[in-house]
Amino acid sequence: MKDFSNAAFSPEVIELMTTALEAAVATLPEPVHSSHVNALAESILRTASAGERNLVDLQRIALMELQLATRN
Image: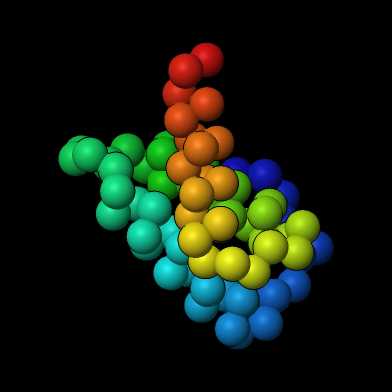
């Protein structure tokens, strides 16, 4: 996972990111690979660090990035 040590989030944003991650993971077919969960989490952290606070957008962007990454 990339270094997000300089990122700081309020408890509300952490809750939002957690919900987005759980929702994104729930859409994946079983078995869910840890690398996919890590990629989703990294995307959500990066997108939230850029200022996004919409739950649906965080989830959608993470899933789109995962889809693009798995095609390479």
